[in-house]
Image (cartoon, rainbow, N blue to C red):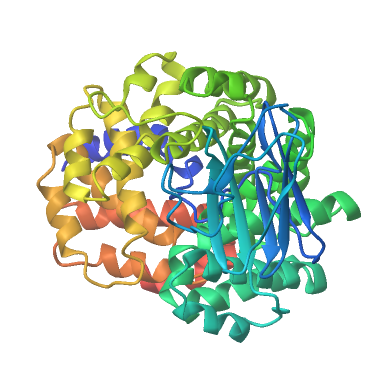
Length: 486
């Protein structure tokens, strides 16, 4: 590759990077990340079915706690476990007949786990009951016994309980340290670290709203910046507005402006996340209608083109997660998965095509080569490069516990020429993003030194991860890594 072609490649990367650094990668969650209602006392919890659905839509209770179901619709209702219509996942969670509108149906949950349910008479009304262990969780070892559980929600909730306890008792830095300990303790926590930081961010916002301050340190970058996603979701779920979001971003960024460059990027992406929450049930089934208010607010809240792109990416991240998970009445269009992007103005499309990879991975069952095949169908180079960068980054999350990436390198080499470099370098960047907290550099450096990289690929790989280090690490930290980057 000539010097001029390298410069051209790096110029295009500067455009793609705005999208990729902002599009923090999120997989399907064990626990919905919106409007969590943590119920830690033992009295019955009341859930009311109205024309807008079950409220609260998601609750967390302790094992042995009772939930009372009521309705204000004036019609019979029938809350029951998924799946519809068999109710076989938790068959005891079923009244076995319609409940009169003037009656209350009570059920005691004795099984730990995450239980999705619906109204059998109108199954579009859905809810979630998270049942956790009735014990005080105060240290990492308290969660070891849950690792043998077949119910992933059981494991996940233990981690959530633990880091929330640390946040409230010892502060944000302690909670993040505990998260790092979990990450190293079992592969389950590596796979779900991003989701835990989401929930930690939501809880941190509640603490911030009480105290009026929160310390921002380098640890808030752990596990794909989920902390900022959750923090902004907490703001909007609590009735906050975009002006407050902008001020919060400035407040957090000013704390570390000389040390870390990722805060503004992560924060504006978090705003976009929070603006698209599926709360307008009248728009369910129409992705464009669900998305439009959030994009309009992104145009208002952000002051620079970079912040606009970051906010857009957060909005698209939310909508594509919903599409990939069949939430809000949305489904993946297997014939034309990019149909949504094609309907949008040009300024939104790079972010849309990038986050569409969430749904692409869903329909291809996380088969990387199959995903690349769908990316190759995108005609415009910029959008295709944005997409392959996201796809590679997402895929790297499945490989952070490995040291052999020959199959990834081979798949990238077999893809279209226009995609190869982004395919390889974005995988390396993903290893940074989802790497071990405070040691995110390790696997990425090993990858970039792979003998399977040919020609200029090694050089480009190191350029990419160094640009990432410049975003998430302090100058002192980067200097300490210089010997590994030669």
